[in-house]
Length: 221
Ligand code: 5RP
Image 1 (cartoon, rainbow, N blue to C red):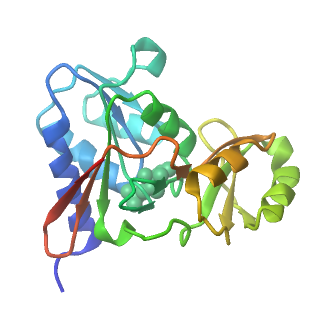
Image 2: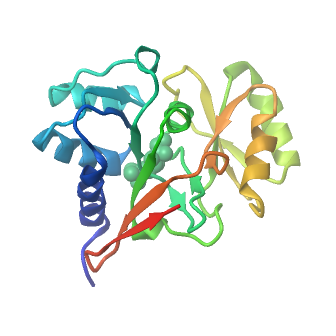
Image 3: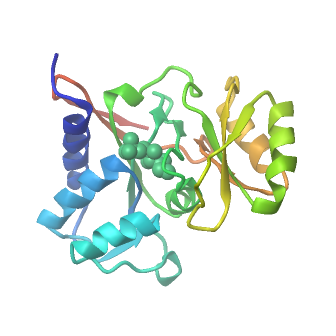
């Protein structure tokens, strides 16, 4: 039977500590796996500066004594650690289950190293079993939904949810993701789209995936 997903997340989170060095500028993602990472980080703070990808993570960091700075107050991130809803062995990801992917992708793009922490259930051969989260400007919601349907998706408004940027999320099931980078470009080119949860143009550099047997597999690009 092995250990459950929560325990796997904790193992992956602890494994990421090895990448955190003294004096670094560290970006922190969002989600339950990152919550576990924040817990282990608090045991032995090392980084000099922390940049949070969401109000949620900033609040959790503040509760543990970490004052976050804005990305504009840095010259980029040495390391960005985040979870994922899906990952492939080609280092492409689906993110946005927590609706924070816009800021997450900004931080990943600004990072010299992007480490993903996950439980083994997140591994897929082809992205897309999990819906693609598309953040849209509120005024563009319907127009973008029609364009996404024309691209093959079934867009579904995430109800009762507003992003940290004040926008809406359309969760899009049904995409055939044969070329993740091309679809990422196509979705992001639609006027009114802020960003989508496909991370193929800036893939992960390292994936730390913990399995039910307690082993943490390290994939390096
Ligand atoms: C938030 C994300 C998260 O990284 C993703 O949803 C994974 O979450 P969890 O660690 O809770 O499984 O993309 O926008």
